[in-house]
Length: 71
Image (cartoon, rainbow, N blue to C red; front, top):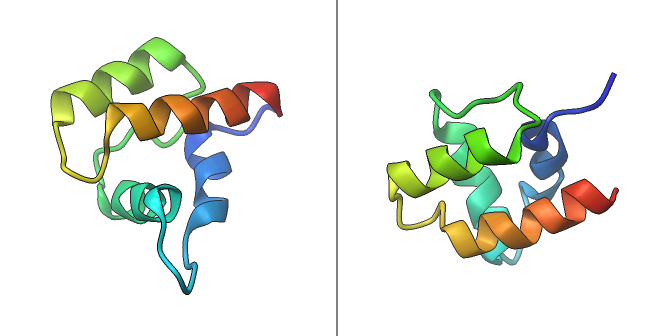
């Protein structure tokens, strides 16, 4: 079974020195409506763009997605 983007991104949580990935992962974790089981770029990208959260930035999502898709 392919892991979801959410499961992939959780590996960035809990860093002692926060960076944009760890801040994104933490905000994503705290967002109870985030599509946690999705592996679909369009669905996740649309959610991030519509959410317009200051930490859930589309540019950060795009870079994280590239890593996820390449894994």
